[in-house]
Length: 301
Image (tube, rainbow, N blue to C red):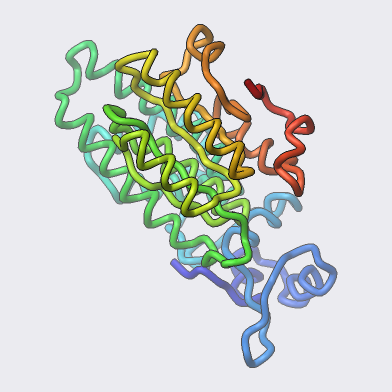
């Protein structure tokens, strides 16, 4: 899957003229870079987003390095959830690639795919395991399968630029869930941030050290599994204090946070899903110390 495309490839994929694509580039409608030889090159992500904005369908996704559509036409969100559940439970990476690739082709962002397709799919898989309809090894295998497919999709995003703001994130000790942070990382990459997932099940001390040493503009903490509420409360307080001292925005989220726990946590911003994270990034002020302008639920304690 190519990271950058020529105007001719974009034009062929959408069955529009190459001159139209070049005109979009020259007018600033479609972001692009130039090669040393002066040729325009367009990131796959920017091409997909621009075509979506202009409501132009992709007729030949294979030109973009994506799998061809199924013969039944483009999937609805509901159908995509059902098919993804089946593909994951049956351990079919090819079907997973086709489903998610098709959703990307019609212009869905990683936030939309995560919130509207992947999250409900894993809720279904979790219930199948809970009620004995699915062996636990299949549930775990589904997690790793999706991790691999999303990693492949990340290759279609433009390479990171050292001038882009840096975000780092992790999960606390006893929280081994990684898919949420992988999707968070993809959302950052899609919004032209550098993003580093430090890992899961990490002790508080090393997260504090990472903030001090790496000095990110933003630190995210994914909370999917809570063993001790008091430990999470203490960890968030410590991270918030260090982040504030480093002028770093501290963002939390995850299915392990209920209303009662959230009221006791210290943070700069809380995002209940990936779409709220996108809203946050779209309106983030130049100076993150201006946190009063953030549109999502936030608090400074």
